[in-house]
Length: 308
Image (spheres, helix red, strand yellow):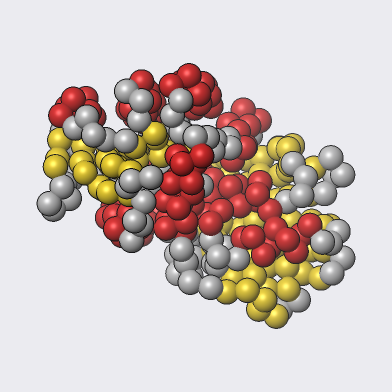
């Protein structure tokens, strides 16, 4: 199979930091075009809209969509309707209904749809999944706290309805949890903290359980300063397990068991090429369903206004 002609829609920080380096190192892809209101990539054909790009570049085989989730459905629909394979940055959409419709359209068009969850490809995630499958889990505590001013400075879209607020990073934790736990978990209650001047939450405290009543407690907060916290702690019959640094390191009873360099986005593009070659899709919506459940079941608490 010849290289897959790829286009990117939405050229921003995540594209420059992660997508472009990963694509450049992957021989399965050939970047041929971009569509973005503001950003361009040197040496690559640039367009202002996906419509203009698709009309001008019929050789495009696949499209990576990297704009905010509130605007992703229309672009994904146009790409799939044109027979293109589609890579969806996380979260895959602003609503579950949007992504379900895209999945149905991809199947109809014979195209591949990839709902990417980059944190699942963190180095120690698979080793953690294997460990938890080998022992009895007593409880799980997820601590995902970071400084929004550092990671998302002046990004107004993220505070708007559909932007997810603190669930933008929190969904990364949920993507790992739903992958590593042997049994499905279900939300039983929670509290979402909304700044009085924002439409999306700045913090969330969530409680889940599985069918065996194993408790899972998740704390998400965007007001963390200093050291950032991206940890999943499980108390098991074998001892305490800590998956730390966003999935980079696995420790059991205080002993480091697994640590390798981060390869999340290269792994995503490897997976995207695999499903295109196989003629399949990869659309797991369990992390987004948990976020939707939090908005449905969580109590709303208004807190002080937040300003960048």
